[in-house]
Image (cartoon, rainbow, N blue to C red; front, side):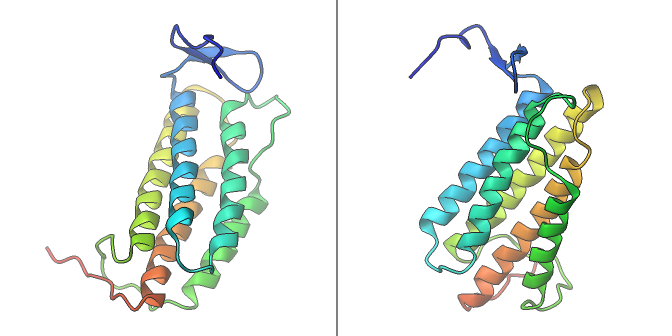
Length: 175
């Protein structure tokens, strides 16, 4: 399917407004979409069933976040709320109960699943940066920034847990 409406470098936001495809808001939406796709790739290759439901829940939340980022504040788009951010905090707290305290920087990697989650965490941080850039010139939901900050923490610790469950030791970074 194609519409040809984007052939001149513009796309639609949530609603009828059209903007350049390289606008800060569209850059943020693209990073959110990339993150969601990357989580889908992690899920496709994951061997363990544990964590799949949580990652699917996160994918659904990312669709809401993408709509939220694409919408003007007055629009009736779905929104990320403080309860979504709190849910990520609770999910992270649950993960941390099964992990040793981190006292050093670790190198991303380990199992294929853990490496994919580390990659997702890095893309999540990019989405957070793009949202910050967009929010400097446009009014956006202020809850998006804390949400993506917590999501990156969750993905980092999920990667650590994936390695732990696979018996892979974390490789400490040494200068």
